Image (cartoon, rainbow, N blue to C red; front, side, top):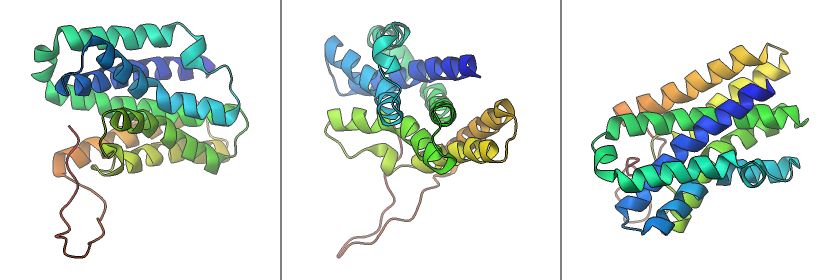
Length: 214
């Protein structure tokens, strides 16, 4: 199971780094800026989780594969940005895939370190959305993961499946697959149909739904 968590973490790192780098390209950052945003988007959630569960030194800083993967994703995005821009639907699909992989891998790693299932599910969600929050803070915008179509909700749903499966002592592999599929499916359906949670009406506001994920 440890190998599976590592594989999911590395795949999620690449797709999140790609998504973060592309947003940096759209904001017309230079190469260094694109690489910084890619690294933040890909590793911030996992680093936060590792610090909270005591898994130090954190994997993103102690394992050369993580910076290598984010560097590759950043360079690819910077060099072939027009091509990737034309592949918006696949990029969104990869982003949803990264969210699912990070959510289930983060939950499983927390469970492996003895974290109780309810808290592990929260840490799994944090692993999934933490990178997006860091990315958006770096780019001076309200984190889209907190106001877009079921982004955090999908991450928590996938993480909860893994946590509940652990609590019921079900085999971890099927639970991880089921959680990832649920998270990915919710995210893609939300993108397809514009699903989102209710937004509070403000004085004089019109209650418009949040912007779609870009």
